[in-house]
Amino acid sequence: MKKVYFIFYLAYFFMAPFFAYAYIDPGTGSLLLYSLIGIATTLIFALKGLFYAIRDKLFTKGLKISEENKFGIVFHSEGSKYFHVFLPVIEELCKRKVPSVLITPDANDSAFEFKNDYFRVINPGNEMVTISFMNNIHADLVISTTPHLDIYMWKKSKNVKKYIHLFHSPTGSDFYEKYALSFYDIIFSVGNFNEKGQKELDNKRNLPQKQYYNIGCTYYDYMLKEYKEYSTNSDGKTILYAPTWGYERSSFFSCGQEIMKKLLEAGYKVIFRPHPQFFVSHIKEYSKFLEEIKKAPNFNNFSIDTNKTAIISMKKSDLLLTDFSGVLFDYAYLSEKPILLLNVSNAYYGYEAEEMIPLSCEFDIPASKTLAHQLTNDEVQEISQTVKKYLTEKSNNTNKIQSFRNENIYNFGSAGEAAALAIIKIHENLLEEGNK
Image (tube, rainbow, N blue to C red; front, side, top):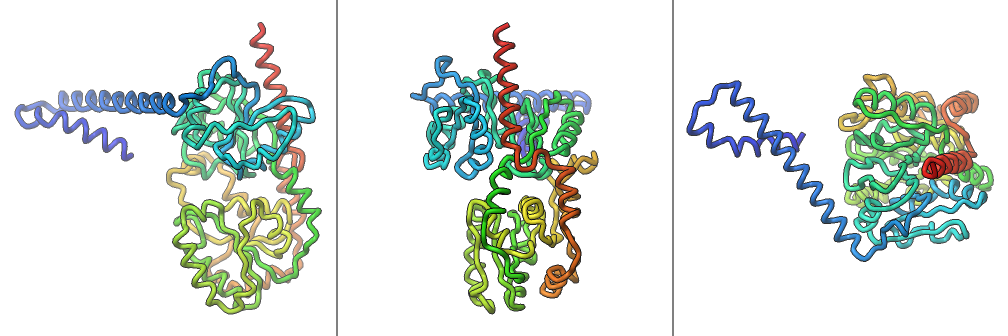
């Protein structure tokens, strides 16, 4: 919207002399105005394209990106925190002696620790250098968890045959910003909801349809094993509070801080696990909260989980308190323990959900409400009693969660193999087409 206003003002600036010194009838004025808006829009996008072209030349200077350095299968990563998503797939490719490469902007990426003759890691440089590298790469396949391909700085390379999106969570694209997956060629679906939602969006936008493969959520391959193997058990009074981030969507800012204090006062142990982005976007609020929580009763029962995965906290806890966060699904599918859902603003504007909800193809919110109990305002006010009720209630969530998981998640515990087999097949087809 800001771009539209800018273009309008730019057009008005050029037309001001005409308005000042001559009468122009409304029809002619409108024609001139829209013509100038069209010219201004074209100019802006041309300059934008030129900027990206110059930037890529500068950042890729000295990097060897040529036909001689053509790659077959490439994993594009935003950094070490995403390697656990790619690892199960890479391991399966290596078992089958299929070579692959991972490109990362993180010089300390944990991917460097994985050693195999059929796998290597390349760090072209910092984030900007890596994006420029990817914008000019020669490859058959590029697999990435990153949304907004060809929307922002990361552009499609004319020398890549197919781009594949691999989801980094067991959710839909509901709370991705708009056009998140619009320009991928292939989608590795976690469940049928991914295909259903994206097809509806592409139809509405008159975009070409994609290919879909039934893959699942790859990081469950090892999380499921680790969860079962981890020896620590819950003590019957430990609550995991794991909110999402964002001022409008996170319960931390509406009621979460008070909830944690009340639970500590009631004698519960509280594990606080914020979304990783919380430590980036809300560092001031986080620091202030730490000072305040130290004054709470039974502060010694309070802890913060900053581990890469929530497995330990899931195992230690007896109940999850959260909002519309991806951890809800991990907790349900892995632990099958009770979940209480805090009612916060969904803030659809600007997200894919804004268009998905009218099309009846949204997933995240309905699924969350199915797997968890959505708290009323009264239940939030009496949170310690509410938690006690759901901890002591004899109702069994296991059957409900297992049924939902089996219906909605492909290849639970074996998605890495499914992804690897799909990649091999896609790659073989491309090579066969190239040899014709």
